[in-house]
Length: 359
Image: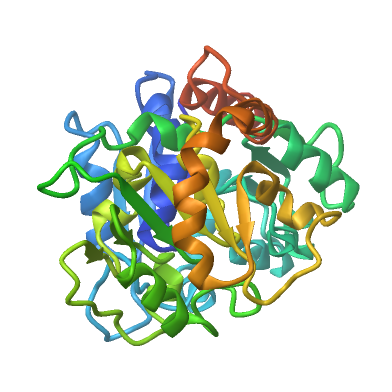
C-alpha cells in the first residue's frame, strides 16, 4: 500500500523552494503518493512548473479570502487551517515549513504526524519559538540549528535531524544583472522592525546607495518587508529595485551579486555558498559581538553609519582573503554541504518517519 505524504503550502512563495526538492524526490518513488495542498492557484502553478511529469498531486484548498491570488500575499494561515481542517487531517503525515500548522495539534482527535522543514539557516533569535516544540520531527539545514533547537528545549536528540539545504538545488544560475561590467552589490534588508536596517534608516541607506561610485546595486528586501512598507523607488541608473518577484526568491541575486549588504537575513548564507565580501549595517548600535543571534556579522565588515558604505566596499577586496576560512566554517556549521543532495537526505528522513507513523 503506498505511503501518503502531504506537503502543506500555506506560506508565501519564498518557502516553496525549501520543501519542493524533497517533494519532487519522493514523487519519483512508486511506493509513495505525494500531495501538495495550497489555497493559492499561483503557488500550485509554481510547483507544477518544476514538475513537468506531474508526479505531485496538487490539491487546491478552500480560500478564506476574496482578495486576489498572489505568490506573496496569502490568506491567513490559521483561517486556512480552520476552513480546510477535514481535508488536511485525512493525511497521516504532513510536511510544512511554517509553524502556524502546529495549531492543529490542539484540535482533539487530530492524529496526523507533523514534520517541519525549517526554512532558512540564519541566526536571529526569532527563529526559535515555542510552537517549534509541537512538531513530531524537525529537519534543519545544519548542526548549528540542531544545537540551538535542542538547547532551547524545542527538540530532542532524536526528533531533530540534519537534512541540508535543498533550496540550493533549485537556485537560478549566475547571470548578468546590469548592462555594464561594474560589480554588483545586493542589499537585502530583513523584515523584523527591531533589527531591520531599512525600517528606521531607509533614507540614510538609500542616500548612501545613490552616492556609491563604481558599483551597481540590487535592492531586494525580504518579501515580508516589501509588502509592509511603501514601495522603494530610485531614478539612479546604477540601482534596481525588486519589491517581490520570482527573482527575489529563487537565489537569482545571491548567486549573481559580487558583495552582500544586509542586517539579519538568513539569505547571507545563501550568498556565502561561494565566499564573497559581506557588509552588515549596525545602524541601531546593537551590542552584537557575544550574541549568537548576530553570529554571521563575524563573516564580514560591520559598519554603524550608512555613509561608511563606500569605504567598506573599497576595502572589501583586500579584506576578503582573511575572511574566507571563517565564511566556509560558518557555512558548514549552518548548512550541511554533504555530497548527497539535500533533497535525497530530506526525502529519506521524511519517508522513514512516514513509514513508521503509517505502520
